[in-house]
Length: 387
Ligand code: UDP
Ligand code: GLC
Image (cartoon, rainbow, N blue to C red; front, top):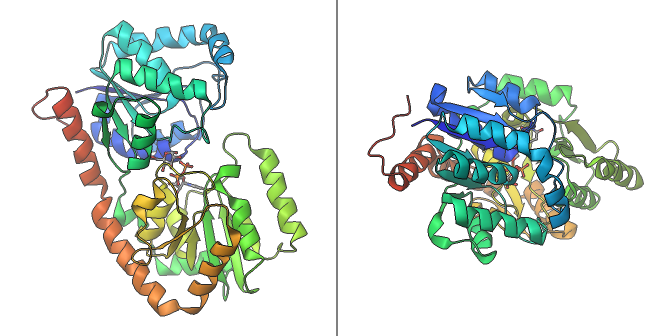
């Protein structure tokens, strides 16, 4: 089976990193069509995944865009639609990995007469999307998709609540290669030294910088912790959130935390950086659809605290494999940081437990198998040959 994957982003967000794992086993039988150029393209090439940038200019519609704005951009989309329809005829299936990919993929599915799969990485709620965008997503998915793969039960539920057909959906979590998260102690020490983290209690935050990812909550919490508690903020503003980056720097200065908060920008050495941490904090203020960083922290054997909403609640069982705190509450987060600072033995046992559970639950081979089986059953194919 030959698959045309579509993704709107040129930058490697969580949905894109997940797509790498899904597309990789298909080798030359897959093509990832992107609607923007950027570092995600290079990443796909590094993984030997065929990739092509199909759009000549970025699509000017955003998660909060109105109906009129959406309509206005339709003219701009026509060359892209024509290109995707042509490409789709060379493949057996269209696999849309993002919302804009769903829009283009649905039209291509209609004109090229190819089945459509929609991988839903988002929670279609009003916190994340305008009503127009939510309606558009469920209408197109209901009408054109044969299968909607939701990245968590939370994403699946929101899809159904927004009017999506339940019988189209299946939940498949993100998969991970556990050995990627094994690190060399010498390398980690070197990194610790380079970042001047020795002797500190390091709380890591790994996420693109965006208001709903809640970096400001961690900074506020830090102000309520003893001076040896230091935070590393790993990630960049991928989608133009420069004002928020400024705000974070001002907040750090106002709280006189300059020596205790390090902004590291976008990094590709996540396992090594996680290994330098004593605790990983996930602080999203709106429901997280899945939350790759939570699983990654577990696979690195690090204690993790996440916010109690969305997919994070399916990943963390409080007291067993991590902590959950109320979103937007720095005080609760500070309490957990202080607890981890003092109760090291129990916390280490919990982190070990978390690593074991995550290794079993999210193994990429099993997860890919689930997707293969879903495709096989939906499209009546006895066995999908990956090679
Ligand atoms: N990530 C990365 N470099 C960074 C910050 C984050 O590679 O500097 C990765 C991180 O390891 C995770 C992904 O980006 O795999 C973020 O995915 P997640 O599901 O946590 O959130 P998203 O940004 O997709 O909402
Ligand atoms: C999206 C979501 C994130 C999820 C990722 C992979 O980027 O925001 O929560 O982990 O997709 O499914």
